[in-house]
Structures are given as structure tokens and as C-alpha cells.
Image (cartoon, rainbow, N blue to C red):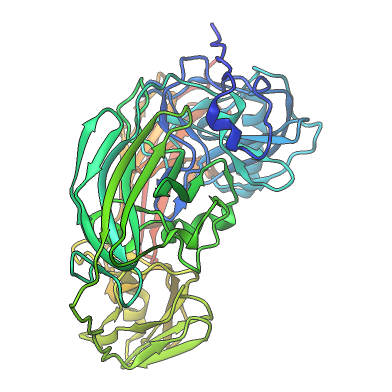
Length: 566
């Protein structure tokens, strides 16, 4: 039985919305009670989460329904990202997106497979069917839930976008609802000196302030003394009633002596601005400790549009002899609230801060282009790669290029080039550029090869080197032995892996004709469905060739017996 969504009453928090959204237009895309695995605007790696992650009871194959009438405007199949995804444009000016699908409905699946077989490629890129190709009614089955793409487990990713602007909008504004009586949980509180004369408890360092929970939704911090301009950051998450997932909050506010000094919420944002999440959070702290602290102040380079009512960009000037009461308030969409109060006494410090002298020779002015070279390594930074001026730590030793540390976020990619003119032709074939921030687990970088140079582009600072890959990929054909009858099997599965540069591509044929094999990179398994191809005769030959990123290849073949199912 299809679940009917409970439409929100006029909640106080909705008054912050600058636009009215239809609350009864979209229905649930699933037939089961909604449980969120992820909320809109959650802080993800380098981006905000653009939709809702809906749990599918840890299963694949649940019916995915059109949230409203419209037409299929885009289809995309990719190895990562949203995996198999479908976009439906609605006459009310919005588009809904459904991601991580296992397959589309019968009509759309056949259409997509025709394209895949024509291209001989699993990944389709963007497909834009004509408006009258796939007209759908509200509640129609458009696909089935899955675990494809960059999914961490079976679920449905659901988005609402403005059709004209492509901006994503919080689906909760449209009445998508699940029970929520829990207030956000405040985990930690950080204070930062933001001016040369700033001191916090006589120190010029960021400082973690101890907090304690007084009662539900109410926290109190230890009193601090401070002077100069300071700012705060908070680690906070939210939970809903039906799950234990640590979800994102809806809004964050800071009041100073009772007056709003800072506010942001996640009503809507564009994909282009999502990268500035790295300036909203304490990026260095995140890279070191894997915890995201949201700042309640805005740095100049931050172009996020989510901010409102900022006073001095959320920075607080503390004057000597005055007392301040700072309150940071976190809310979820329903309005469940948690707040921490921070008492501050303005007290000038006699301590003198001596700025450490930078010894590096590589000073970067953010709005200028730079190219540096040491030994066989060159790095090139386009204008505005960095958000602010820095002194770059760049050195090369033992063929390892240290390019600062990965604790600084970048706005653009830089180019890293290795001179390989001293390497033989065979050595060049097996070499690739790798990130070795974790030496035991080198990560292949997309390596472009010229005669005497290899180069890559990346937005991650850190340690890089050239690695050699002499090992070919491994292939294991599952559940089938050579010359075996497999009449009852509906699929053919192959496990592939590579310990060096990683899998680049594969090509599989059945009776010398290309076949579509879907790759689950989490399980490292390729799957072919026998329903794709009409079998002729009973004896068949399956062949697969797998290549890694430096060109090492492995080939396997097997014969089996199977008749076409009647």
C-alpha cells in the first residue's frame, strides 16, 4: 500500500524561506515508511549533500515512484556519482532526481541498454530523451532502488531542483516528511583568534572550550577571557526518530548579547558554490581529526549564498572590561533546538604574539600564477588556486615531491609534472603518479604521459611520487566451471581486482559479441544478465579482458552450455 505523506503545518522555521513551495504536489518516491539515511545540506567531503538519502530497508529492488507527473528529461549511467540516475521534469517548474538505482523500468531500461550496446560502454554520459519519449504519471514506477555509483549501501538518493536555475532545494520544503522529535547534539566548541591582537585565555591559539549539557537541548561552556577579534566554531549533528544516523542540521545561528550576529540555513544552494563548504568548516581540523567544525564566522573568500544577517561577518570584537554572552543555536528543519551559551569577559593580555618567520622561498600571492621546479618535479598553480596568500612548503627528496600539507583547501586544480627522460621505454610504460599521503595505500592519480614528462592535475596538496606497476589485474569467474551446463543461472559474475594502479577498463564478449557488464566497485564484481542476449545453440564462449591504469592486461575465457530460456 502506497504511503501517503503527512504534509507539514505552517512551522515557525518556514518563515525564513524566501519562497513558497507547494506542500502537497510531490508524493513519496517509495512505498515504504520514509527513514532518512542523510539529510539535505549535510556536510560531505568537499560538498554539501544535495538531497535526501532514503533508506530501502537494506535491500535493492524496491519500486521507485515518480513523485509527480512529468517527463523523463535526463538519464545518466556512471560508475561513480549517482550511478544509475533518472531526472523527471514537472510542469510546476521543478525537477526531481532519483539516484543509485539498480535498474530502470522495463521501457526505460530497454532504451538505455540499446544506447549502451551501441556505444559498447556501461557509462552513457547524459542522455536527454525527447519530451514526449517517456511521459510519467504521479506514482508510476520509473525504476528500482539500488546501490550503484558512489553509494555506501542500498538507498535512494532523492533531489528537488529548480528546473531553470538547476539550484537544489531542500525536499522538506515540499512536504517530504519523517517523524523527528530529537534536538541536535552539540559535540564540541572551538574558539579562534582572528586578529593579531586577539588573545583567548592569554593565548594566541585556537582553543577548545569545555562544554556540559545542562538539560535537553541546553549546554553551557566554561567562561573564557578574551581580547581582540575572535570567532567560534561548533561540531554538531542531528538524529531523527527512526534511525541512528548522524545527520546534518538545518540552521546555525549565533547571538551576541541577545542580538543575532550570524545565521545560515540550508534551504537551497547551487552546485557551483558547494565547494565553499571547505571554507565554512575548519578544514585543517577536519583533515587532521576527521571531524567537521562549522564556523560561525565568514572568511572573505567564501562565496556561499546561504548566509543571512551577518554582523562583521560573524566575527566578534571583544573590548577590555566588558562582559559578553554568546549563544550558538542549532536547529533541525522541524525546529527542534539545541543551544550552547558562552560567557566571555573582556580582558587585555600582556602576552606578546611573535609571528613566526616563514623560511620557505615559495611565497604565493593568491591572485597570481606561479610555477616552481625542483630536481625532476614542476608544480604550476593557476591564478586563484589558493583562497589566500600563503608561503608554500615545496621540496623534492628521494623522488618524493612534498607540496605543502593537505590541510589547506584549494579552489582550483594545480598541475604536477615529473620529468621521466632518464627512464627507459619499458619503465615509462609501468610508471604512474601516485598520492602517498598514506604510504601503505598509494592512490593512483590520472597520469597523462608525454615522451619525457608525466603530469597530473589535482586539488589536493600533499606528497606525490612515481610508482611502478608490474602486476596485471586478477580475474576470477564465479560460480561457473569450464564446459559446465548452467541452465538455471540468470547472471554471469566475474570478480576483478588490481593491487597497483587500479582497474581502468574491461571488455567482455559472449560468442564474440560485446556484452554489458555492470561493475560493483565495492564488491569488485562484474555482472552480466543473460536476458540481454538471445542465445543461439547450447555451447557458448565467454571471454573477458581487464586492463589496469598503466596498460597491464589479463585475459580469461571459459566455455559453458546453456539454452535460451523459453
